[in-house]
Image (cartoon, rainbow, N blue to C red; front, side, top):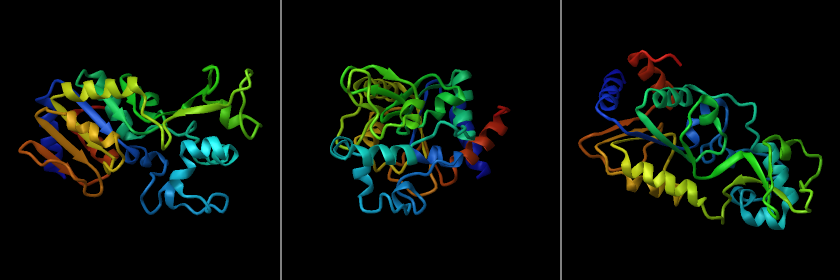
Length: 252
């Protein structure tokens, strides 16, 4: 991997506008399970939820028609408040501070990029650290749903308080999508990491990239265009970024 890291550094050195597009694999090294791997969220045995399809538990239908089930699953599986960023998050924050990285487009809802210090982050699936009332729109802090003693958390107006995440059957947030697409279209280098590119429409956003350099970091093979300036690294993303940071003299 040493030669790949050197090539990676050369690509960054030659770029002025780097954008990162990431998924669940970015946060697995922080202890947050991904969704579809053998140890992922969808394959975890839990007698409370085994009767349901995993996608249903994260759907608008479950929220509306079986809210007690939805909120129990959310409280048990989506609490990332005490999780810390790993080397991947820290490296991207450092690259932003250096002026190279212009934006992060993430499918994750854990808020770890911001916790690491990144400022320009497009959360196209929302965030579990924000909550709001479905009736009046009042905002509630990250702790509210997790610490509420009500099975279905209610606002003072009587409406239901929900996390600000994009569930199955819901559209992606317009402002985050437009920001992400604009960033990708302007980039001269795109780094894709920790994603299998199987979740749509989010995965289709990389098609807006028309820049020169493409780097893909993922432990398993994913389908991307392999042009002259494409670098594929099959390794853990935290390990790759740590070695890259060491080569660049960046302290994580």
